[in-house]
Image 1 (cartoon, one colour):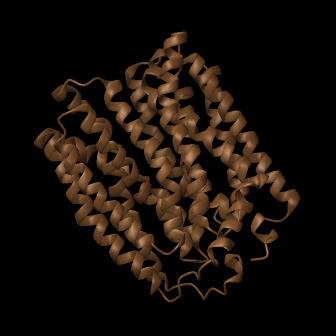
Image 2 (cartoon, rainbow, N blue to C red):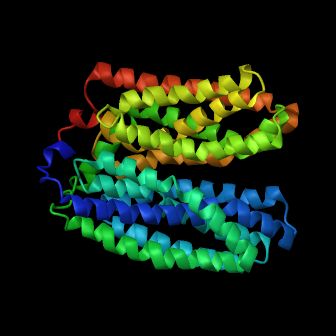
Image 3 (cartoon, one colour):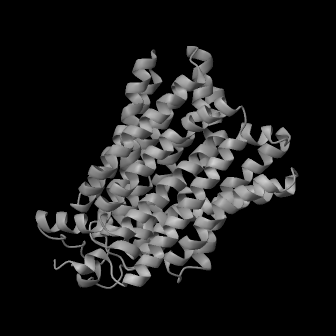
Amino acid sequence: MTIAATGLQPSAPRWRRRRFVAGLGVAQIVSWGTLYYAFPLIAVAMERDLHLSKPELYGAATFGLAIGSFAAYPVGAAIDRGHGRTVLVAGSALAAMLLVAWSRVASLAHFYAIFAGVGVAQAMTLYEPAFAVVARRGMDDARALITALTLWGGFASTVFVPVTQGLLDGLGWRATLVVLALLNLGICVPLHLAVVDGARGAGRAPQPPIGDREARRAAVRAAVTHPVFIALAVAFTLYHGAFAALTYHLYPLLLERGFGEGSVVAAISLVGPAQVAGRVVVWWVARDRAIRGIGMATVVALPVSLLVLLTLPSRFASLAVFAVVYGAANGVMTIVRGLAVPEMVTKEAYGELNGILAVPGAVARAIAPVAAAALWSVTASYDAVIRVALAMAVVSAASFWAAVLHRGLSGRSPASQLQL
């Protein structure tokens, strides 16, 4: 059966939906801020205090992302079975414990062990599980709620970069981590307990079970072997790899291309607001457009931004255009990534399928920064990195367009071909 065939009740009262998305949204700000955006700032203090090198410190972040990628599927499957509230609460509690453990780290091995757990906590608390919880509620406005969540999450760096720096200046990095842990316990855990459970009583029943275990497995097998799903996996994996490689190296890359430090900092500061602005445009202007069309435009934006960087003069105007297009593309891609599977593949087993789709993308995000550094060391130039990223972005765009064209030509999703 598909979601369309489950006989869902009318939408929950508006105030309950707002409470639901606001609670998840605030939790997303705290989760992203403490588990992701705080890391570079704390790493600088750790480098000085523990005499660790940047490769050693950032290697832990890469290791955690890689471990977390393999947790994405079981997390999604657990949410599909109705355990979304438990997953989010346990993930926030785990994050708090790991942040406290991080505050007491004394050796590199201990640090890497902690970050293996941090990767799992990220897989349990960031966008993917939150999207799956929204989708499982079966709300007919899931697209609006997912878009709203990305708007909330877009403010995580704006809030937590200055907050973390202020804490570091006043308390030091160890005490800062304890404060960040308390935020997870004091904000995320209560919010997940309140609003996720509250969504069940928001005037409509939770989505019924998809079926028995064999029927669920059949739906997943049909989806993952379908050309549309495979093309989406290629598109998102290459996109995330290219974006991660560029983002981690953006500051030295732009300096190498002849831009001054002030211009580089100003341009990078545009990326975050551009991400939010892109999501706002989707929210207000393209709310009724199919995610396929939005995605087709979005995947083209990344290679266009790189062509701007490669071909236009080394002036701030060119750099600003690059930063705005680059940031807006990534902001909208988060929404496309969350909605492509239910619109283009199937509405069944959202958590499991999104988890499967997330694995290669997370691995690419983990490997790409290290691979870009290795390529730079061989060529002694970021030009090669940009060109490889451009090639990846072009293939990503072609793969997404192929998925859309195949979906349009076939006219049916894998789920509709199954007799469930």
